[in-house]
Image (cartoon, rainbow, N blue to C red; front, side, top):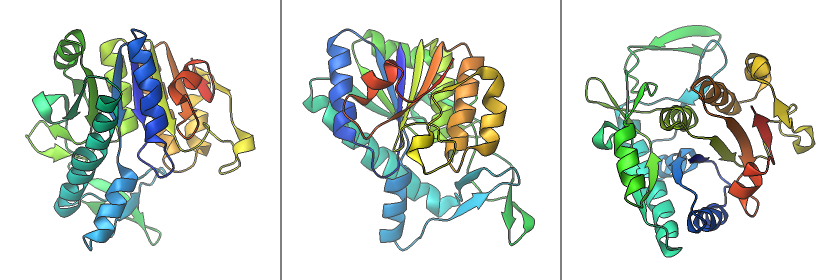
Length: 267
């Protein structure tokens, strides 16, 4: 079992990812595909006159400011746009893909954060109307039922809270929880960079390997959303996943290349 997370940033080549996924499925590999939708959400928010906003935690993690209006845009972009684009491409390549959000069948369930802290103008402020959380439980039975029936699940945020509300969750860390729950051999986090860069955006500074013991250090110097990928890698390994690779979704055969170790390997 392989869990493949497709990044939602600009520059990701969906056709290349889906071409490669179709070849692997024809070869008998079982895949679960997870994706985000950051670029699609930003574009839709701009068109709807609700420019995206982001918050930075005191520890340096950046996330989307998700009030109720933004949550609706996020749902439209992830489930209604990005998810369907991937499913469409896979179906055209004879992959029996089925699109799901983390809400469907309580596939991804977690607790909505009562408050989040944001650094604004040098001050820490408390935000209480944010619809964010983390995935704490994965409906493995639902995924296995689909996989055993010959389907390839394609899963997007949002998740569902324990209070039955949609919540924005980080797709990299949700993919890590999914891979751990399924007992996957590999988790591949495909993005618009070749892997973890020691000096972002210098692609020549690619870090080829990170030991499990060095993950906390890597989180500290990773830039932007790469922090979440490194956190997800550590959580996946801690959950029993054999190997995690942060790879490049801009190149040909991106899944196969990541399986061959191209990118940053956590093991």
